[in-house]
Image (cartoon, rainbow over all chains, first blue to last red; front, side, top):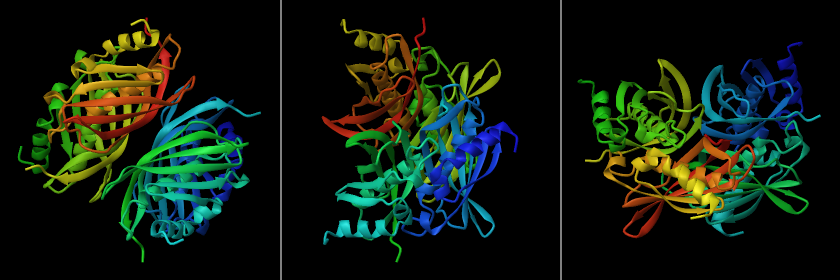
Length: 141
Length: 141
Length: 141
Length: 141
């Protein structure tokens, strides 16, 4: 891929060990919109056998963060300042898809949202809505 | 241990596979207050080498959820309805400690808070503040 | 109007003294979607002369609450359990429009969102995004 | 009063017309902690006769904002970037007291919390907990 936005998001994503632990993949990168997919493996379940809210949050957060990064100058990284999640339904199924998007770009703050869906037998269920703030930080050398 | 609150929280915690994936341990259970500790292992880092916000959230969420469960009748489990996190400092150090507490108990909703600290060279740094809502659900058989 | 949903929301809205203090009007009621409009009068400004975040929140909250009520059985009222607001731009202009909607209906919890716009010289600017939880309560006699 | 922090917060507070509409007064200013008091007048009630969440939010927001301002350089104003409120109990009584405090100061972001209490027959009831982010902006001339 020669798209510089895709290339830098992919490179950053691959340095996120937690995403590797979750078996997550970067499935789409657009301008202000990023999608991440991960299996609901045995290792990420909570006590009732559903996807743990920590997994749902981590995927929604990461998708929203890269959505913000996709509209920032190339010499930035991004960190989460704050993020709120409402859980809408249990995370039941084979995998989760998180779709992050930019609500409002800005030089100092980027307001983002993210929706997470569980895929079960070919059907998408909306399981979480996230809304928060990302801030640019200088890229690590 | 014969304390029934500790016993049921411990039993529930041990069924949370994500907590095992994170190497987390339940380090304290009080009435309306629960503490969870986990190492900042290589497998939970983000792209800059700090603890991923997903780990911080998962520990804070789980500690807050069990704090809520500790004040509920014994035939309930608890699920997160919503939770908001403000990240205060990077998660740098050997491990994280999450301390959850009940702000307001209730029959239908329990309002909770959680604080997460990074332990580095013997010093605790407050890295995240969480506030949210837990709801009781019937215990799985 | 003979639509029972509109009639009960209108009746409830008219009992909200704060909405009268703000000169707010109920401008649209749909199934799971409610719109409220209010002037940015001198009495609701903050120290820089813009609409106070308290006004923006109150309108967004009320629109979201009635959006939730519109999908509930007729013998309920609704109260806000929690609500989060991200402010996107200053509230500059002649009036504000808040549009509330239901993200996820439920018997015990209704997850809602609301967007608030400032109208200045005929142009709508998105100034706030809210996300939260409404809960049904028995109607006062 | 000759304390420069108190003087500038008082001057800013008096330019907040919404606070005048609510009859609110600045009752305490400390270093990173501010208290605001307002009556639960007829003009700020919701449909059940309690304090409207919009009033509770506005007071909590304003107290938190000035708590942030109290730790900023003198040539700044402050605006709310985001704020989340959990409502714990109905706002019943003669007046409300909002107590804002700084959780984490910073040059670009100040993380704040605020608690709101209803005073009824001499008893304080904790009715709301708020957590959010304030950002410094240059002072208007």
